[in-house]
Length: 491
Image (tube, rainbow, N blue to C red; front, top):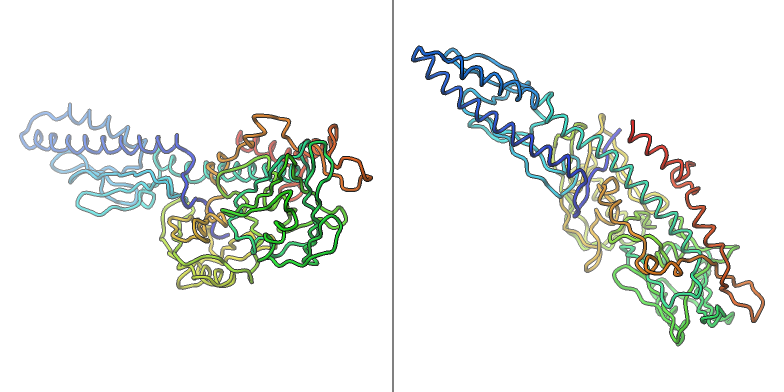
């Protein structure tokens, strides 16, 4: 058991209804403590004066009954009349002034990232409520919010993300008929040379006319590091020179551009553009084809980075220009433990970044270690028992000008949020015109004079229909996961 990722860097958290209930409960506890303390003064005055205080004592008993449902209370009668109230751990609530609970809903993320509830005893300093409350509705709401609801949010985000991946994988190997005039990818969070590095296999960028006839064919061989135009001689390229080489190969019928971490392909003169892999040696990086890695023909999109299989290797440049990432560590019950601020190296490789994150003194090395898997996903293996949660409480890093934060690029504390699931939507142009769905496949094996894209080709549609059978998590299909997820929510 170890650290579990629970939060988000910049974005908000789910569970708004639960947050409202927590705020209402905090407000009611403060009202009750204030009234109980005011009655203490009244009861003491009447007791000292020898008058009957039973009326005030009855009202106080009713208030105490309600308070005890919200928070655990230890009660002791005062010699001068009235009651002294303490939490189960012994913190003073009332009897010599009233304690105050405070709750500030937060959007910084993390277990407890909805906002910490603190308690300030009379004349004391604020302390986390979960360190002192042992039972009661308020403690239950906090544990529900930071535990069960957060776990369901993580499952929901994972399921929606995997569903989008499956649909996009199918859509990226197909094309609409006629082919669209442009394909615009998603933000990979990477610079183009780093994104191109590590690809293997072969892919083809094709330009077609309105009838689906081939106009230009650029074959890209990542293994050999070459491009060829219309079956001509191969020309070498490097990751740094990929964009220039592709533009030269497509000109004057089309072009390519890269901005904001996204690759775009375009066609001119009423032509369309489509991408297809070599069936014998398809392109692949981080388990995705060339088109799918860049999201050139994604069907389901999000305004934020949702795919954390970056394809980065320890020897790749990290791309970060310094800054810090602050991690909030929390106990299994959501109570805050401490914050750790990690200084992110300026430049260097991913191995250098891992060294900083795993440092026992300046990183999270005391609690476990980060590592990149074969797909470039940054994961954490904890070394503590019981599990300690963590979230990105603050991040001042940037991968290139305007680029993603460390926490955004790698999903550190973001994969389990409902905000991640809520960001997805079917592409605007497809919603406006379903004919833009990629239902056909580019067929480069047809005889000369035959269209490479044909109306009536439904192979892409069959791929989309089969997306629910994709094994997105181990050997379990998306359809089975959906059924199991619904059942777990019901339970």
